[in-house]
Amino acid sequence: MMTEKYVTTRITPLESLDTLSPYEIDKLQDVSQGGLYRLFRQCCLAVLNSGSQLDSTKMVLDKFSNFDIKISQKHRSVQLELRNAPAAAFVNGEIITGIREQLFSVLRDLLYVGTEMETCCPGASESETITNMVFHILRHANAIRPHIQPDLVVCWGGHSIDRGEYDYTKKVGYEMGLRGLNICTGCGPGAMKGPMKGATISHAKQRIKDGRYVGISEPGIIAAESPNPIVNELIIMPDIEKRLEAFVRLGHGIVVFPGGAGTAEEILYILGILLHEKNHNIPFPLVFTGPEGSDAYFNTIDDFIRATLGDEATKRYQIIVDDPHSVAEVMREGLEQVTRYRKATSESFHYNWQLYIPEAFQQPFEPTHENMAELKLMKGQPDFELAAHLRRALSGIVAGNVKEPGIRAIEENGPFEICGEKAIMQPLDHLLESFVAQRRMKINYQEYQPCYRLQPDSQLAGA
Image (tube, rainbow, N blue to C red):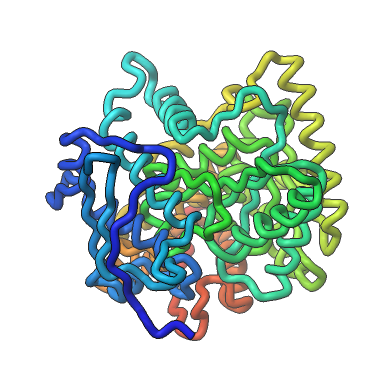
């Protein structure tokens, strides 16, 4: 039985990132507003806190307020000094190997974005710069595999799911792993962990020794959704928008499990992109799936999409309930179609350059009370633009639920006010109420208080 709560120790990397410059070390230790220390400490704490039942960044930071991390360059390699680290990351005083790897992945990505990416792609448009930045970060993390045919399936879904739904995600991951497919998720618990866990078993049965379990996160969410140790490729993107772009550029198909506001945000993101006329002919397999009893969840999602984005959006996905085998087969066949298309169009297998992502999906959105109130939630605009605004609304709700700045903003100024046309607000209200009723907003659902208020605007058409 573990009685020790905290561990103080020193660790070094096993393979990569052997040396740092004095400039890089100073940047990581810089506690000023422009320094990386606060971000570095928060992300490392998230990695060390794997398996926690806390899904609030603020609560995690408060609980481990005495945690500190120092970095130095010793005669052999980089060394991290951990003070008052969560004991769950250690066994018999030794840090778990997967967690050690993830700590140095955090170090690698924060340094790369904070130094070398500051002058990315001079002369390119802002949209091109963002897409190239995402590519460079993924390549620097060795996530780009140019000589392998499409086999990476992105799995989205909630961190707050019940045991039956979690077991189902493992079964789907198992079936996909039997077919030699690899898994990419948001790297946290719940539906982000289950598919990886299932795939590890089937990869072992198939004697696949280089299985990929890619976890993509960002600093604002990582402490609330700590990486699970199965992740063997952890990548930290600068913000949620680049995280989402990394999923759809690196992955070859997407499976969506039941979830809450964050999962709905991801669904709106991919559907908004696929609805753009420039992407109509690009194959991108998209499956919504869950165990028996999840029909109501997906019916609500489907109704919401029809009411807001229209019937055309529903043609871009399949709903499969309680059939892991069929999900894996549909995804395998979809990836074969992706392979044929990319061969025919001379597109790379490893990064989906051809997919057009409008700037509305790339620009970072700061969920302040003012920005949330100014969202354009109304009919009469292109479907992809409405999807972009709806995605921002859901992103703000996620921030208010689990991200430290969002939680503090709600504490200081009350719930976000979200205004829009009645034809949009009614289905949005129904969707969010279903998430609350199904206990999908937070792990500690008994304590959940909505961080938003929906206000139909009588000045808008149809209100």
